[in-house]
Length: 370
Image 1 (cartoon, rainbow, N blue to C red):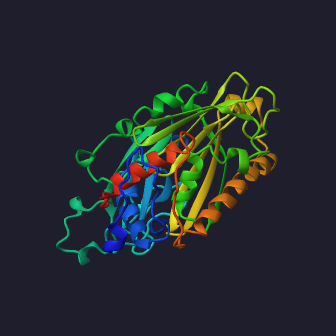
Image 2 (cartoon, one colour; image 1 turned 45 degrees about the vertical axis):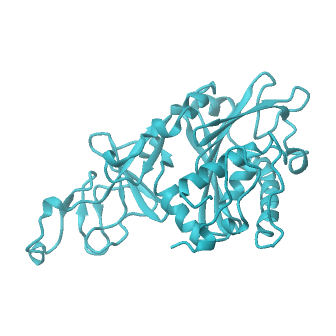
Image 3 (cartoon, rainbow, N blue to C red; image 1 turned 60 degrees about the horizontal axis):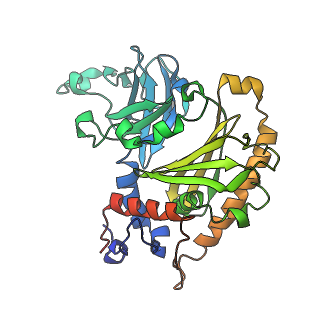
């Protein structure tokens, strides 16, 4: 249970200039509520359909606190289930790969691609077990643009909204990118861990006020005067124009008459398009003051042919920008326990994305905002 102190939040509206109290960035109780409402109660991006090309191909992930497995069935459908054996609760699969069946490594209970029990050793030891009722616990799975999303609802009837409804207009917004999202293939993936609350990474992404200070030299390709933002349901669209008087950035390339279609999908991932790639950031809280920050890079076959991906060179320039951001959010985390911590006023409109995020965060957690 949240303490009375943790439950009290300032009144937050889309137009409010007041930020979240400092304890929201270090309270483990707040994190538990975030797991329950944000991660366990919303659609979460977990992979690509291409990761599950053939029947028996699987991948595993953790959504909030819940271990999940996804597998391509014999019918071609993608199934998503809790990665837990119903017999004694052992973890079933790890990582990603291919399997003929889902087999528990503890007692060899075996399950089909649909999660139904197929075999168990020494069945006579379970005389009262109705095997027809034994199956892996399902979760909901849907796709958009080749990306796979899961929702922990066990039954579609209990979903508050479909993936299409959840994404609101964000899918149509991204379709302005002149490359087919379904054709993207992952070409790189790396991650960082930082002693920073996950929300600070989101807030930093959502505001452009820091660009002239933090990225004064590293992001000269973007034109600060050509940044157009728009709330989209719980999400936030960020359309960024390129400067006409600067060289093409090695990792964020784009023509002067084009835009980078960027944005934040609530609660925890961000997308950025460039001429030669798409990058996605995904933040996962490991503790109240510890976050995994993942970078996933995608190209279509046509992009790969025109712009062959060189990981060493690409990461060098991409990492420079990220390290600048990481240094900035560490400054924020270092102060959250100070009695003087707070937000005097958000820059309008440069930091309005943070206000939008805070409002949706407070509404989702259903905390006392009076």
